[in-house]
Image 1 (cartoon, rainbow, N blue to C red):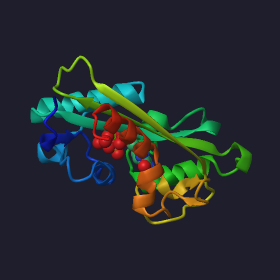
Image 2: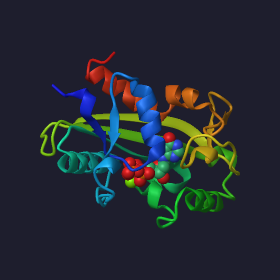
Image 3: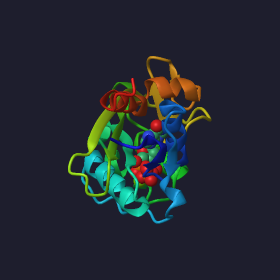
Length: 198
Ligand SMILES: O=c1nc[nH]c2c1ncn2[C@H]1C[C@H](O)[C@@H](COP(=O)(O)OP(=O)(O)OP(=O)(O)O)O1
Ligand SMILES: [Mg+2]
């Protein structure tokens, strides 16, 4: 049984921490791995699943506690699923603004009908660093890539992601609304079911 009062989030991304903590509610306190180490592991996997497990094991090893990791990204149909697991590194580690500028540029002549994309989130939970049976949950969120940035909320590619069911960008959604329908919300819903938290 996992002691949830001491669950470590294997992420250095403040946006993820905020969203995941809001979804989990007050019963579980997520501690950031940043409290234990500022060194980020190299994400050497070839899939979201591999990177999520790698990050969870690393955080559990460093903290000595059960760990939850989130590996996520944006898969653009026109780009054959890129940037995918490389979403955070799309503009060579120059950050969200540079990633977004590069995506807008690459997609600038692509017609509406071919601008489909999905956000992907894989959550991995390990009870300890060598856990042979990580819990894995995946969530997808379908939308389209906008031709210009819009909205101030969220993080990452949110200003470029059109949400058809709400007719606005992901960065225009109230955080509490994004947290009900996003790829991360879907993955977290499955995780809560697996853990018997709902
Ligand atoms: O809801 C989202 N809204 C907008 N953008 C998002 C979202 N979810 C993931 N993304 C983007 C951000 C980053 O470019 C990449 C995740 O990369 P990813 O390696 O999983 O996270 P990260 O490096 O920021 O933090 P960490 O690895 O420490 O958890 O996908
Ligand atoms: Mg990362």
